Amino acid sequence: MRILVISDVHANPWALDAVVRDAGPVEHVLCAGDMISYGPDPRGALALLRGCGVIAVRGNHDQAVASGADPRASPAKQPLALALRDWTRSALEPADVAWLARRPIRLVWEGGGTRFAVVHATPGDPLYDYRLRPDAPEDFVREVAAGADADVLVVGHTHWPLLRTQGRLQIVNPGSVGQPLDGDPRAAYAVWEDGRITLRRVTYEQAPVLAALSGLPIERPLRDALGNLLRRARLD
Image (cartoon, rainbow, N blue to C red; front, side, top):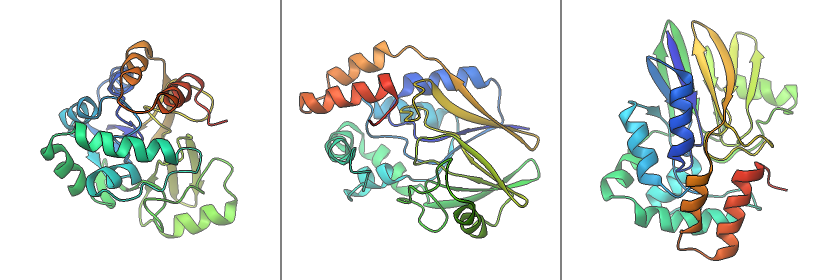
């Protein structure tokens, strides 16, 4: 069995389409949330995800758009998050907002004889915990693992790919499809195949998404910041 593992699409269907094509045939798609916000085409991203039969949890931006809540993004991105929360909600159909609201905060799914736990951030704080990064200390990784009754824990949120093992548990963050922040602007994803997880990247044409960003009805400094994030894949 092959499973496509993704997170943080952030309304960038151009990157998502490249990932789907590059991954090739899969039986299932697991998504660790943040399907919308920051990007310019939330309806296109959701249509593509739903067309793939995605099995997804809500991320902090999905929660914010669905409910009007504070996205509680990192300080450097909070102005962008607030501006795009309101615009994204206005750009979606009510049925799209309702679909986001129905996504669980946590889920456990079984496939290929394997038990997958999926959350956006960490089991203890599924929406907002940014600490599970590639350089996370071992004691914190053990704490995270203790909260996951599964063979594989799928997370997102940091926009940094990660693959760690804690006992029998594999922990994977596939990185961000639509807005990487690790210095590599290629779309990031992972593939689980018969127990083996591979982190992968794929180049996609950024011109269409950058053009769409330039037309967003938000302040120009915010549009410029979003474009720079896509080009540089860095916050600093």
